[in-house]
Amino acid sequence: MKKNILFICTGNSVRSQMAHGLFNHLTNENHNVFSAGITPAGVHPLTQKVMADIGIDMTSHSSNHVDEMLTIEFDYVVVLCEVAFLSIPEFKGNYKLLKWFIDDPIRIRGSKERKLQGFTMTRDIVKRKVQKFIDEENLGS
Image (cartoon, rainbow, N blue to C red):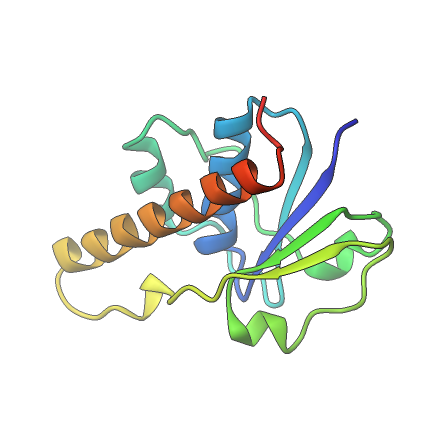
């Protein structure tokens, strides 16, 4: 049976978007996957770039507000930052709450190369966590 999985971060522009795209890519979209933010800010262009670099097209993704998810019964709610964790509403269902506090690469200052490197590192961290999640919860295809 398909599971409902929600990934949340503050702006739904980087980490939760990466997790959403990676989960679908690694599981062949066998589950209902959502991502949302406390204050949606649009999908960051560098998120799209670093995901495209590994063959994941994020151009159809959009930022969503967590309130849009309140009617869905989730099996898993994965929070990717402390700010979002402190602000998430109570969702329907008996879901498992996971906390993956990952630094936001948007905060990186400096050259475009340095920012791109930060986004790439964040993508790789998120990918490892998503793969571990899939393996531990037997969510693979």
